[in-house]
Image (cartoon, rainbow, N blue to C red; front, side):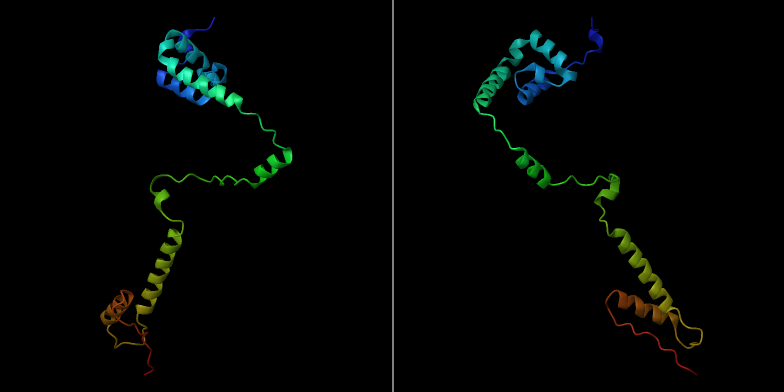
Length: 157
């Protein structure tokens, strides 16, 4: 004899959902819920009478439809032509699912631009008369699109 304490309890809403999904035949229900659903349906048949009647009528209509014999070649070609499932990689979680895939490349490019501008702004040691603040300011305005930046040419003295 089975211990009823270890039998899962199925709500009335779940039983109605099972009836709508699997029909009026309890043997078609999932194994984990079959026993509890059968007991609850026996305890309160009035609760499920309308859903069972609708399901029986639908089952009768579906039983009138003749079975279609699909040739194996057609079935195989349909399966071969079906879209393939996407490769499952590591699931994106948290904030990373909103970030585009090119973001690391953009960050690397901005880092490279910053280093390039920083190296070009630094004055060569042979040019002693240039004012570094003016050069840095020109680069900043050029980067923001407000002016033209011309590379400083080193003059031989």
